[in-house]
Length: 380
Image (cartoon, rainbow, N blue to C red):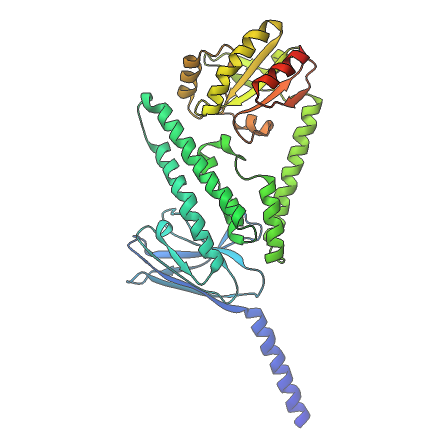
């Protein structure tokens, strides 16, 4: 009889243990949002592929703005969760580990003013948001500002300045926190690029992803986000190899229009030495280079040298004004609406140039006028 009782107790203990494993560890996210003009908050789990979100729960704010979520988590690597709100407000991203007791407070605008305790990674995300989205919000304000045409240049310059500030904040944060999931979050923000697509890839590169992967592999060896980074790195490398192979075989063609709506194709200049030059009217370096290129163009144009210039400006009026003001004698085309052109040639920054010889062989061109003139002389 005693053996039966002992056996029953063992079975009960096993079932209790299994039940506990299935439930996971109790985790809480709570807080108080005051003056935000919202009455509810949603808890969402970000997928391990970092591509989708799933709504886990919803809570109504109490009269004093308080809310609370309690749920079970497996004792595995931390995961991304986020608090989202009605009316398409920006969500608050959190890094949550099993057993965490995370508390948030905010007065007024939640995203700009929230404070978080109980999660070091979540606090780092808050730190990043403060630097990155200040510049991002300024960029959004510039984009929405309806200034008259005489101020277009100022507006474009301000937009590029704000975009680069955001990208600089992003790159600095990722570089300083290469072993943190907060850097994974920061690396995947693209506010600046959403307003100025030509800046895609200007800041974050394959090298940043590789460094972050190495750091996270030590801090969170079981994290599902390691596979996400590895996939992105593999895609970057494959794309670079493809672009390199295409360049060796023959240059990809480009078809764009000048200010008079006349269509020009890069392939129309086969048999000549061509400088394919990506620029922006808002970039001082590009404009200085334009002035220096005039002497090179004057010297070699009659011998078969051409410049095929592609603008990355988002404002066509600004680009036309710059071309007229600078009296550019070569083919200058508007590429602001054709973002694929910049991806095709893997343009990561401005200015960027390629030199194509008479046989169609293309090489990246160092933007040094003396070196350029020497290279052109050899090709003609």
